[in-house]
Length: 282
View 1 (cartoon, one colour):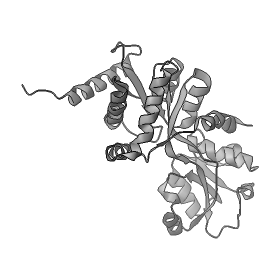
View 2 (tube, helix red, strand yellow):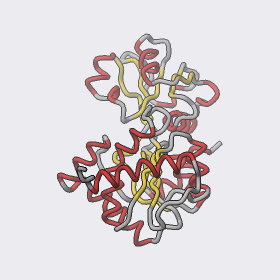
View 3 (cartoon, helix red, strand yellow):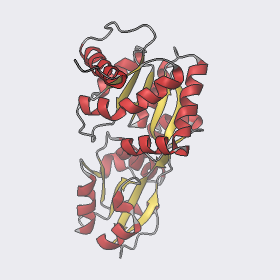
View 4 (cartoon, helix red, strand yellow):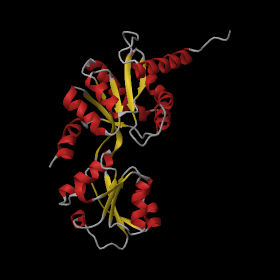
């Protein structure tokens, strides 16, 4: 019989452990194993097995640095993400939207590790010939934004609130950013909000669509990594060091490319603490 490689054994173990963890909370695994929850948010569309396959190389990389095995636990349900963090079932969490991880830091003792670069903002767009000059001019206008409960929707609403427009009560909320763009191009709305990570906000795309940028919300963390209060500080620092170093080597860059990420940055701890206060401000 052909020998099974160590990588294949590790990957199989990860998949099986993930399935067990997903269906039987509290099921047994090796005492020194760590569990890394991954949640890509509502718009990912990836199946659990796809998330395991996608993030296994990162788990393997971090596990080697920590001299332990890291199980990838895909989380496709926000209630499961919240309960898992509340019960400290996840040693590491990579999750978007970032308000969930911010609550885990505030309410459950999780520790900030790093965040993906760049930060994300709500970009407010208007037709190229619009007379509007600033976000304050949106007051009384027709506004289309991403779904209210989404992270981007929350960022869009909060910045408009600070500019004097009650977007939570008066904006039109849609599920797809493509609908925002359509409404703008057809001039069915006066202002539309989309993610700064969207290709639609590039100079070329805006020119083609006949749109221009009116303003942006303040930048906020995107897809942060946090660690359970159970993890020793030395382990947390090792994970941080490894994440920050990924963009500095060919192998690390290849791993980031597999994940569709640019790299990781440090220094967002205070911003994560302030995020919820800003979003929840009345």
